[in-house]
Length: 154
Image (cartoon, rainbow, N blue to C red; front, top):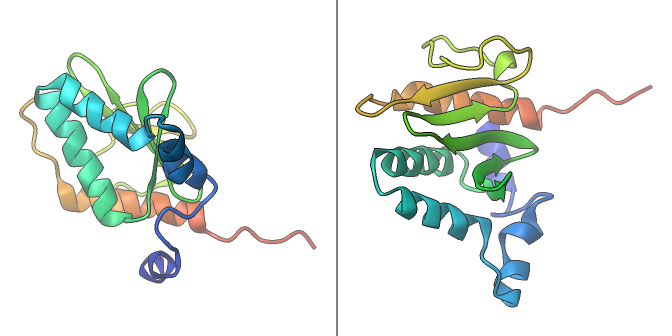
């Protein structure tokens, strides 16, 4: 189902399209993707490498993901609504899933923000391996939640 969804959508489609592409480039403003590139370079350590790896996995799973830059420096990824944020701290890179509480996590990747009813997060620390297959499954699950058709009111 999700593979068909991606095949049907042109790259960059969605309600955040203007912010991602042409309008910003035409005015000379820095795009959200360029801001994320700059943040990764600015970090220059394991946190930048981790954020870059997470971003690459997201783009691998969701080729037409829309990147934004919000809240004074937080990368945010959208597809049919907000999916996740990529926050960087001194001792962790946090990937927060906007609807994480509704996702199955059989590999037990969620290790942060466990007390809430909506979000869940994964804190990645220096030297820790990323379970890429389990993370890809969570990413696909997040997309599935966002693209589910809501029943129409009768």
